[in-house]
Image (cartoon, rainbow, N blue to C red; front, side):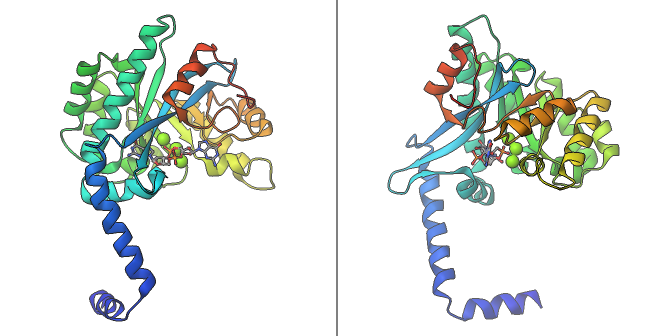
Length: 285
Ligand code: C2E
Ligand code: MG
Ligand code: MG
Ligand code: MG
């Protein structure tokens, strides 16, 4: 039945759909070249210690400087990279560049080791060679393993559990830390979470967004913080835009924060300056 429906919708002429398809094919072709042409770059968003407002590290977020379309956000090309398998070389490039940059910063102001968080898509996670890739990148760049954090979404806790558990254990054995990104949006089982070697829960932005309003989100955010505490995991609140959200989360016992209130994701040069300033990254920054 699904096939018949698909066939008929293809037969009916839908200019908008066709335009979308053409655009996607063009983007896909361009993305294949983007890596070699050096069009990808990383922006860095600081992670802040809630208690003293210091920058403790960064999350690397990929951008694509397209020759004609301008700067493209990851949500507009990561899905294409995942669908085509380009996420594998792209992901390795991101990992290498983020580690290289972290080492460069560490050599410059050798007093402060910082954490570098890198997003890993499920398509990368599912490949058996991911631990090898991570190990190679650590060696190539000289990045200390304990300064690298891999961010994965909750889906790794939800499917193929035994295999995913084994993969997490292999990654953890390298000495890196592991974070669950956008936590609270999926349906991960508490039983799994307890078994899995996860260090950090990142509270999804959607719960932070509506903290001030009449909603259950405060209760949910607070529950995630307590869950983290009881499992010995640290918590990072994503998407903090206002002081009120920061204060509420700090009162809940959340340890780390990210968000436009402190800083948007910024190019490496600017991130390096944030770090040098010693970090009272404030909303004024
Ligand atoms: P994410 O890992 O959850 O990253 C956080 C996203 O929220 C970033 O969007 C960031 O710019 C945005 N953000 C941070 N603070 C605030 C805030 O206070 N308010 C609002 N409204 N937004 C905020 P970005 O950079 O567009 O990235 C979107 C998603 O794309 C990321 O979500 C991540 O899932 C994915 N992504 C980014 N870089 C990579 C990468 O190198 N590899 C992979 N696999 N995925 C990536
Ligand atoms: Mg992330
Ligand atoms: Mg996130
Ligand atoms: Mg998110």
